[in-house]
Amino acid sequence: MTGNSNRLVTLVLLGWVCFAVALTGSFHSTSAPAVAATVWTLTALALIACWKIGPIRAWALNVDVRWLVLFHLTRLFAGLYFLMLCHRGELSCAFAFPAAWGDIIVAVLALPLVAAMRTPLAKTLLVVWNTIGLIDIVFVVFSALRFGLRDWQSMHALRELPLSLLPMFLVPLIIASHVLIFFRVAQARGTS
Image (cartoon, rainbow, N blue to C red; front, side, top):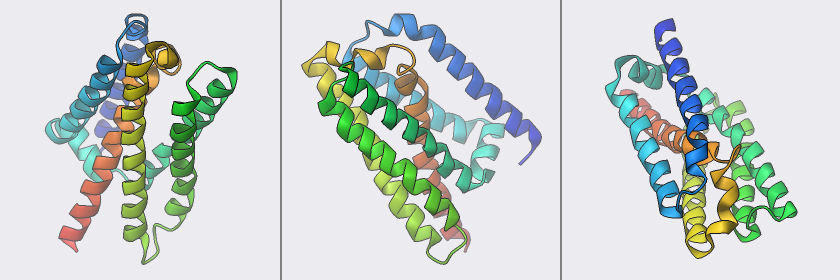
């Protein structure tokens, strides 16, 4: 992996987060289906970039899988923040509790998984963790849509900074990283 691939990926991610922050004002009145569509569209664009843009593809195929797993530590902070907002009454607790605890569990399990990456069970543990993590984040996206359709105002925190960065930045990258991990595991099985 070249330094140019790393620089390009860094610049793309910085540009994306700046774009997400800039759009936050218009995101405030967005409907629940539009928020969900944003997540899935940005996830698809991130994955297309990983397959179609040469330097990003080189990065995606060569980055150490442990970094992709460690990226999920961000879910710990999101989960804790969900719990705090629930406690304050600023986010629906019926959404926040399962979303938060799922994210917290996936994040906490990332650390022992990374520590076990050089063991004979590493690939099995990685696939199990990745499956649980992907199911959890998909559940979170659909739960946000469901609660947003029922009571649009109960999910307002997800349309304002800092949580608006979840559907506009972090969640698409989390989903894409799960897909990349599955791809990398399959690729490793094919070459061994």
